[in-house]
Structure formats: structure tokens, C-alpha cells
Length: 426
Image (cartoon, rainbow, N blue to C red; front, side, top):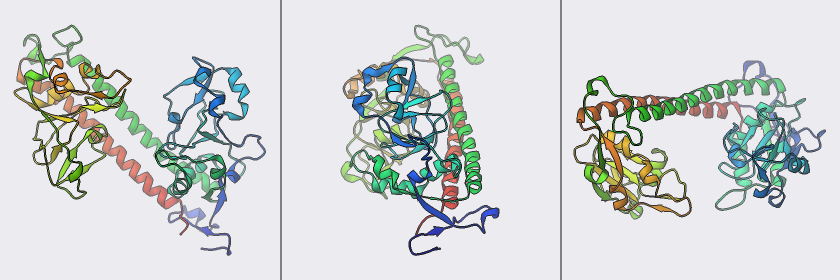
């Protein structure tokens, strides 16, 4: 609906009953939701030359980096500090609990989160933008949701510059318009609704991390420690099964390099092309083909052979769950088990420390055939014990997969709800 020629008002598709007869939402400039009574209410981080690596310390004032700015949440990892003196020198770039920080660059550009109250104050990095919200007029939790909503995100992406890494300037961002309700009570109701969903999402995400840590600890108990030939925990029926055997991948598998599929990619293809991106993203990034140059069979283990320094994909594995579905791309190898239980081999060699040691942290890592086949590890002698351990770990993986699916459903529900709660200008 239109109020006049120049000022448009719209209403969301889904509105709480008590606000359905209220006025429509309005477009306001981002800078106009900030508190102009405060000197540095809308400001960017310091110039790079004003905060260098040599200014970092082991303690003092924490520096908020791009990695700390999540899409609606603060990421506690990546802690660096600078001195109190340096922070005082850059006082306009200090940011405080309850302020909003946005990213000038990254993926996605313009994402925003609230500063936590873990410290009395922080210092922004050069690519941060601080917003101090006028809380007499607006609910800061709602403003974060509005900034991260699709409508405003598209505006940021259209206004950002750069072909490889998108970046948006402070001057451009300040004049972008945000579609909001002028009713702070309505803002608060929407923020609380989405906040309760965020709490559910966070709880499931925490459960996933707990299960992953549990699995990690379980593997440390079920597999012999360094220098040992018997694990700390063994299933009762195998207590007298003897020591685990030292072996190499060359003794346990047949090796084949993947083949190039780049010229045969087809969005509607029958076969999934297993490349390093497919494995590193746990199957989230998928390409297809109708020309399988290196078909994988059920039980084959596919391993990433190349990655950047300190990358998280090198030696990561994927175990094939069925026939006639996957074809192996170049820089990924196919390992076909000879006699050992395939699933236990997968757990034994996935990101195995022997293979990770080839990453020197300086140049790209390229594992050769002999590097892979010389990989040393231990296996139980009895196939039945191999299967028992594999089944135990698989049951934990299935629990993790169930929670990941639940997390994906909650995120999809939140996305759909935000599309309904936040209107769009046609």
C-alpha cells in the first residue's frame, strides 16, 4: 500500500493479531536507527596502518575480527588482543556490549551481530562497522534481525563492490534503507519470536558439537593409543582376541586415481561427481554428470589428495554407500578394501595424522599415491571386532546426522518465518 507518492508503507504477510490494524512499515536509512546523541554512533574500524600485527598482545583489550562476526550471532573463537593504550588511542573504534557490529566484507557481506558482555569494551578491526541503536525508538534485537533479513541483505549485495570478495563502504551503508515497524512493541514481539527460535537452533547446534566431542573421545578409547597395541576399551567378547596388527593402506586397499570430469558437468546428470569440494562440505556442494569416468562402488573410500596450506580437506574421506551413484574426480583417489571392514578403514584413515603431516603450512599439499599407500595404522585381527567397532561409531554418526537434519529443518523454518514476518517492497 502507498501512503503518498514518495513514502511507501507495506505490511508483512504474517503479523501478530494486536498489530494487524496498525500502520504499515516504513523505509528508514540505516544511520537513522542509530542514537545520534552519542558521538560515535555509526563508525567503522581503524585504518589498517593504525592497527598492525605488531600492535597485538597476549592480553588487554580484545580485538573483534571479521571471523567473530557471525550471521546474527557472535563467534567466540579467534581471540586476539591489543594494549589498553592502543585501544585508548583508537577510542572512536571501541565497541561495547549491546552495540551492533556489521562486516564491511566477507561472506555474507554486511552480516550483523550483537556484541556480548564478556568484556567491558572491545576494539573493532578495520572491516567492522559499529551501530549504537537509539533504544528510545527501536529494539536493537529487532534491528539485527532486520539487517540480516533477505530484503536488506539484497540491498547490501547490490551496493557492494569487488569481484572476488564483496565489500561495502561506510558511506554507502549508512544511506541504505531498512524496512521497519515504527512500533517498538511490535519490533520487540518479532525479535522475541525469532529469538526463541534462535535458542532452539543454538541448543541443537550445541548438541551436535557435544556428540562430535563424544565421538572423538570414544575413538581415542576404542583405538590403541600411540605406542600401544591394545585399546583402552574393548568389547567383552574380544578381550582375549590379541594385539592389533600394524598395517599400511597398501596392504589393505586397491588404489585408483580419480579422472577429470570438468568438461562433462551436467546439472541434471545421473551421477554425483565426488570432488574435493563435495567431500570437504560433507556433500553440500554437488556437481553431476552423465559420463562417469571413474565409477565408485559401495564400500569404496574416496580421499582428498590436494588442499591449501593448513586446509581442512586434505586426507578427508567419504565412504560410498551404494553402487552406480558416484564417480571420482581428479585429485581424489578411490580406495577399494581388500578384506578389512570398509567402515572401520574409513574411520581409521579419515584425516589420519600420518597423512596430515605432509601439510607443511606453507605451500599447497599434494598427496602422492605412495604417500597414501604408506599410511601406517593399526587394525584388529578379527573381522568381527572390526565390524563391532565400526557399528558402534556408525551409531554415533547416525545420531549426529539426525541432529544435523533437525538443525537444517529449524534453519529452514526460521528463514521461511522471517520471509513472512518481514515485508518486501514490490
